[in-house]
Image (cartoon, rainbow, N blue to C red):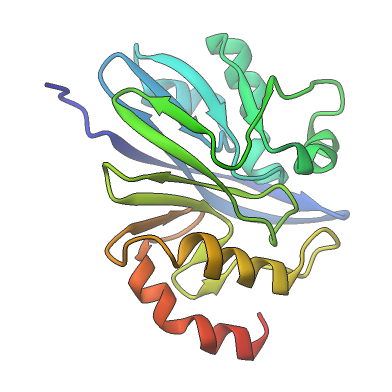
Length: 211
């Protein structure tokens, strides 16, 4: 039996920079796995802190929900430290290269793909809107979905940036996330968690308010 919870949350703090503007943010870094191996969802800000959270487990991959700086800025340092691949949806390559111009991600994340994180299967769902290559990771056995910046308790992720699109993020939530079982716990890239049922109940309201 694994003594560690299959899902661990680390909080890391740092700077989010986009289009020349900077702000202080706190991110959720999710570690999924067992006692031997794990996957990190969104290596944010502090690769040493994430490495400490992993302990002596083998890091199988760093998977990115999207390419914004606050979700990928520690990915290269963590990958170099642990000798593991970085996976990103190809549609976010441009955002990635704004942060890491001289390093390519190691492999693409594609809709419908299944990744293994210890004993857990992660299904890749392409959920664009916040960014073109935004993805969520659904773990049916655990009843959780990692939504990155696609879905939060108070609504969809921000769509004010040039690569963002509000109708697209609403379609992602409606067609890819709201169809999951209602008791599925939604673990986002920032802040607290919610459930699919809770989000689905507010979807029409969010759609009509327009953000």
